[in-house]
Image (cartoon, rainbow, N blue to C red):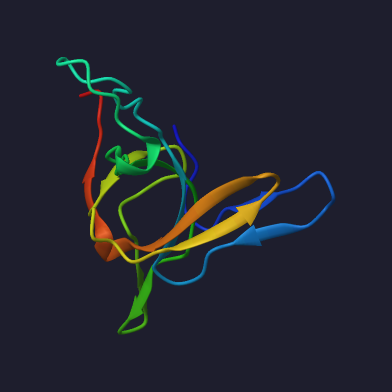
Length: 113
């Protein structure tokens, strides 16, 4: 079973980051866009469509309403799809760039069911 909410990510240097509230931290999953179209036209990297998938690496504790915590329904390790218009923040950490989003910007969660 996957880890529950309120997970921190630790770096080798001993520093760690964790999300608060309804914030989630994603590692982008890059879909390899075609470099050359079927017609033979080269597509520059800047014009290729970016992936809107990511793996949850950390998430906050959720929302506190009427004395109870309401979970976000996600776990560390989940593969999610987020809106192409999502407003997030790039977070550099351990040589990679993670994406911080609000849970409301998550559209789908992949499942093996």
